[in-house]
Image 1 (spheres, rainbow, N blue to C red):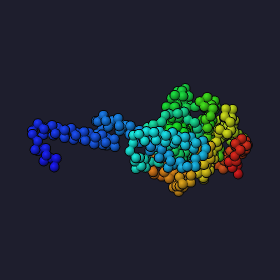
Image 2 (cartoon, rainbow, N blue to C red; image 1 turned 60 degrees about the horizontal axis):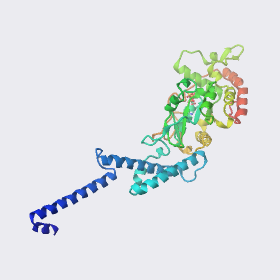
Image 3 (cartoon, rainbow, N blue to C red; image 1 turned 180 degrees about the horizontal axis):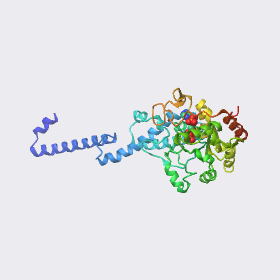
Length: 387
Ligand SMILES: Nc1ncnc2c1ncn2[C@@H]1O[C@H](COP(=O)(O)OS(=O)(=O)O)[C@@H](OP(=O)(O)O)[C@H]1O
């Protein structure tokens, strides 16, 4: 009907009306375009999109993070990590409410649900967070099971760790703390930064240096029967240098007298009580956790429970995360960090040891016994290496 009336008007009036119609059409199209941009769907070249989309991304990130935390942390939060986590949830929640109520359409739950729970408390895909010096370190012992412990711990959403061994407090100390910090992954508030370098435990200067970085650093030592540890150490060297002398001949200064060569590092590392004494000059006992390398294999979830408690984290890593791989002969992860596939440690972990003369093994057991007793006494834990 409007069209038939317009057609009866004189040409200038028709022109004015059709211009008004064009303006209205134009503004309608602009509104539609703006609406389109607010839902994050317009082209990248548009300046409107650039600002509103960035803003939307920020808000969506805040909201997704909040939802993911809620799913994975549950309501009964306890302990150090839990209280820090819940305060972070509150902060994000407040930020989300203020901004969302002004700016956003109702939350798009499907967007948040698509964010993997693996990002709960972890680095977001946008790369947020900052690099921090580690608050906890796996300081030893070499061949104790340190890699297994770190790989298992990395499953925890509140732990971020460097994969490689930085060797900062032994070999690279002159590079300075900023160099060290730069090696660390980015973490969100409340997450714990970790690294493992097993040689720290036997490095004379390490306790003083770590204490100088932070007196509050939590220290974890994975210990293993010093005799099997020595054989494991030797097996590793043998795999790189097949021409080295036999384990038996390296063990003794003098085979006839049976004098043990304590200067051989494979033997020296296993005198745990002596090394621990050095650490106790700088750290109180309750800041050091001893993990049984044997139990890490027979009951990984049990040992991981103790470690999570020590770090003040919710016990998220449990029995459900492990399965025993018959071929490997070790526990493996059902899902490794950042993947949905099962994961066992590599070929260099769990090597077959050479057969060692039982008399030499017995001599080593006798040698280590008093040191082991002292170590049990110091740590208050019986590791059962002397049966
Ligand atoms: N789940 C699992 N899978 C494979 N291997 C495991 C596992 N848990 C503990 N271990 C034991 O870890 C030993 C290697 O210790 P480290 O990782 O501390 O070695 S290293 O110092 O970093 O070279 C390694 O020693 P070897 O058996 O002598 O190779 C293993 O016995």
